[in-house]
Amino acid sequence: MTSRLKGLLRAALESLWFVPLSMLAVSQALVLPALLTGAEPSAAFAWLGLEDAAARVRELESGYDAGAARDLLTMVAGGMVTVISIVFSLSFVALTLTSQQIGPRIIDFWLQANVTQSLLGLSLSGFFASLSGLLVLTQGDPGGAASLTAVAIASVLGSLTLVAVVLFATRMSEAIRADATVARVGDMFVDAVEGDGAPRADAAEYREAQELEALARTRGRPIAAASAGYLSSVDLDGLADWARGHGLRLALVARENDHLLPGAPLALAVGLHDGDGGARSVEDALRARLALTPRRRRTGVADFEGDALSEIAMRALSPSLNDPFTAMACLDRILEGCIRLAHRGPPSRLRREPGGEAILAAPGCGAAWLAPRLIHPIIEAGRGHAQVLETAARGLCALRDNATAPEDRAAAERLLARVARAAAAMRDPDDRLLVETALEAGDGRQEG
Figure 1 (cartoon, rainbow, N blue to C red):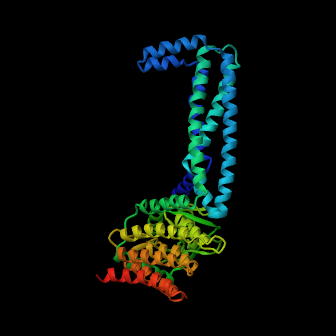
Figure 2: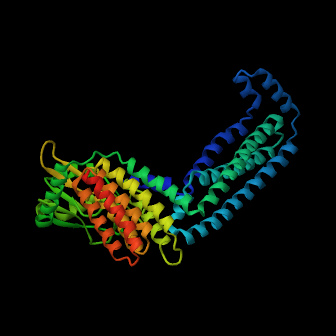
Figure 3: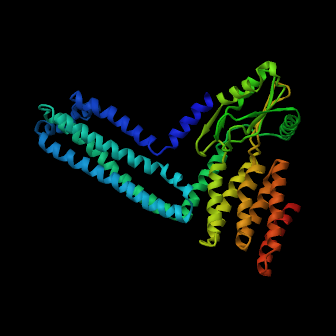
């Protein structure tokens, strides 16, 4: 249940409309009481101790015309509708160009930008604040205080919206620039790596996880997924507590953002007997402690952001674009995140009995898994580009040198061997020399 709630909350926060609708709800919760209770703006200044300003505002209240207020509120409401139209028009144009040049999945990163959501929220808040003011001003004789309150609120929201429009236009102009998109997604990838607060796994834990996984493959009973979807999150602690209480040991097969099919293996259970309720009880426990979503989303693992960078790089290396420098920028950011991850060590994915044996193991999410997933396709796509292979060689040498876990170093070595094979297949001797020099420089640093 906890995993499902976390998944729903994460999906809501990543939605385009969650922040705008929240801003609208908060603004209306403040605007309606102020208008319906006849709040006086002068009282607020008096409460702040600004008596001169309060006296001046009282003069405005006494002479303010409700008809003029209606005209101004009508103008603000119409302006907010125009702003919303501009937002969608600019968004569709900029994001259409972005999807064609960089990749369609990059659209999510721009739609979820704070500027876009804040502008929509301010526009909706300004429109409904003006609408609420017009409704109040049409009921009887509202007086100057209510008219001034409605105009002041709508004017403040309208002014903030204009500031947000400028920021929004700047952000949309950046969306069609590949370097700005790579920088943005790269920052999100590095933040996702750094934001993983899980304890780090040591060599002993890695061996224990391997032993439990090997035991589960030989003696475990497969637990199949009951429904289809992308695995958004798993409550490892809750699942380990349940397994401990039922005398079971579990090895998960699926990793976050893996797609599950009904009947596909989700976990292997060791110690499961038919008399204990059989596989059905484990299925129920797993279902209650994981969340499935209809599409891939950002999770606690950094693969979603990393896959976006890898996709941009492969698209840039396609014959239609032939943009190796964008691919090199993507490689730089991928390697930056992988080096940080390798330096910290892989996150812990093992749960033990207190002072005892391993009770649950989940697939590792360290650099040994992430780096090949992201970098291998770029190396294959960049076989004809010496600059790309040289960037990969330099970065992978740094990854190998900074890794603290043997499996991370081994993964970097395998990728370096792939770079060396790609360099050996290049026809131009100067291109081969460029890549081989980078590889030799990295080997020299390691020996030193």
